[in-house]
Image 1: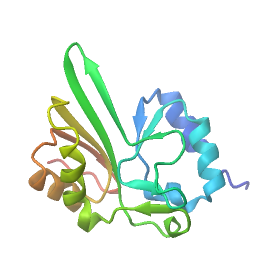
Image 2: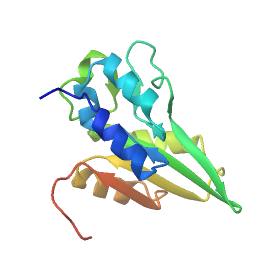
Image 3: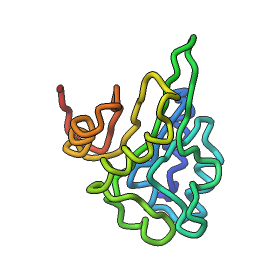
Length: 154
């Protein structure tokens, strides 16, 4: 068959009507050019707080580091955290390691002190890292996570 380089996944996410998404480890299996094409095709906003372009040291073009929303006076901060479990990321992406995510997230949140009421972390981390974040970063109200391939009820 023909290799699709993630076209089908972006099409599916667009069809679902997602508003926000964070990177997973397989986004970085793509070349930088293919990833930029997938981001450009997305009808949703990519949010990534712990992944930067290794060339610029900044977030990738058309990727937000966070999103601050207002829902009838309730300020919701959304951050995105991605696992560093990626074979292809070394070429063009700098990813804060899972071992450093708790401290990284605490430092990130200091700059938002008093600016949000609810914090949502979109994550693509293993379950143990999500649990560790929940235990060590009490400011997080909700983790919407992925990366595990087994169902869990917590």
